[in-house]
Length: 426
Image 1 (cartoon, rainbow, N blue to C red):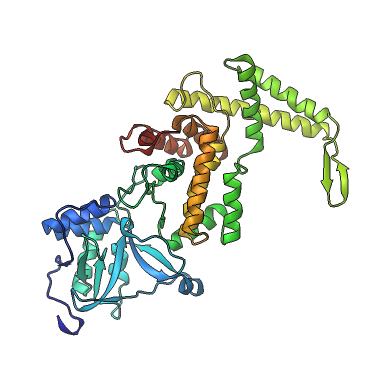
Image 2: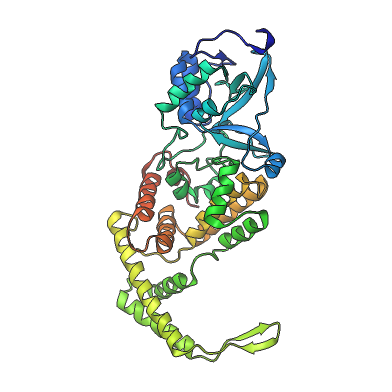
């Protein structure tokens, strides 16, 4: 054990850390590691590692100065009398800290990127019952590569999978409800639906996701988008106008509203509004009156709303055929799309260190309360969320933007462990 060499170990053997007879593992990954370790089945242990996202800690300030790099920081472990690099699976990650972030890599990446000066040992999930130490010699790294080649590398989980933390994530209460409002997207991505202390795919990947999809590169941008989502201000006002006209008619007539009637009334409202005197506005130049819209603009707006009503009606017909909407039901507002994304945005911002855990939790709670105030069930919320997403992305192709959500909806409404079945709406 001297001179940092560690005890002798065969290519598929590690040095066990602490064990216990029963352990409530945070997620399926840790449970599989623990069971393989108890059996002494190191081949199975490496198979799990090869399919898992593996996280290493790094300093936030260092990455700010040198983005795109990684620095291994080893620690001395008396179990092997050597410096070891701690590596974690996602269920074992600590709560996000302002000065420490976690980067995600695969076992295959570690096997190929390891350099002669790097630590002579790794320790997987230190301090836990599935803790195990492995040497990092060329022979051992060749073993890692062999397992990685036969695994769905980097993903111990697939898209379209309901995954949650059994330990370390809320399963009941207001926070869990707010997290479940983002479950359609988290199931679609195969991510942990109830990880409030969220790291996602690691600091670098979460920052890239926010930049690519939202144009967010800093805290102020994140705050602005988060507030817009929580206020349901990112959905189209035209969508809400059209849906609002129908909702009013449904209340007035206490029954279904035909598409032709809906279109006629929407057109009447638009033309009457255009014919009214200009709206009074307060501007830096004083009190002014908005100029009336010209006829071409009004005609274009009417035509656009007429087309939109047709799109909504066709989507809802498909929703009913696929079981997303009950017969005779309709979507009253697509605010759910913003509330669901707000739930996700809180966690993405936390993983990217654009907010604190407390800020993220408050945003998740607000998203949940707003959803409860505007909808009456998970099913109603889901249909509204999916309609908003389809109106934005799908363009009536009924392609993956729709099919992915339909699959996620079915998982969430049928899986016995789904929060939509274990959490009451109110």
